Length: 256
Image (tube, rainbow, N blue to C red):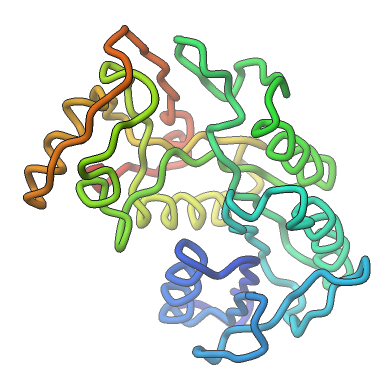
């Protein structure tokens, strides 16, 4: 069970953040998870909205861990993602946060065929990379830490359903870099539990890297759906190495 000292604020308590909140609440943590709505389904929910160049919020947990799990689709310019993150970091500091952890994406890495680790050079060469890298730098400059997450799967995100019958961009021989929801939640808690020992950045990606053709065919067979087709069959081995976080005692427990 948790103690009175275990407190957590989750920015963007949606598909990933909400089960994180629920899990830690069940363990006795004091938890607050933010969303934009003023109507709350769960007692831990708090409104947090960026408007008129300021944050309007209901967060009041002091001495808590902060985790930002605002999803990638919210990172377009019109979402004010970077402005929201900047002010959230200031708010966390004002509330004596124990640490600030950002859920980023392996999309920060180039698309070239290679094996990418946390030491790989990251270049902001695409519009997709730029806000991700800028957000990471904001957090790192503030003394926080970053998890670069692979493609997320789990409840309501079953690959055998969301790719069924589609023509997918890229190659059938492209390797997948995926991770299951609960492994990500476990990785987040592992870093919080080992904050002083943890490195600034970790990749969180399952060690299995099948080709997209093999992976999606298996998943579609599982759900009885039509396998997708691909625009290319050229070799495309882009692999994100997620093994470094295992040095903290973390283990990938869930198949992709």
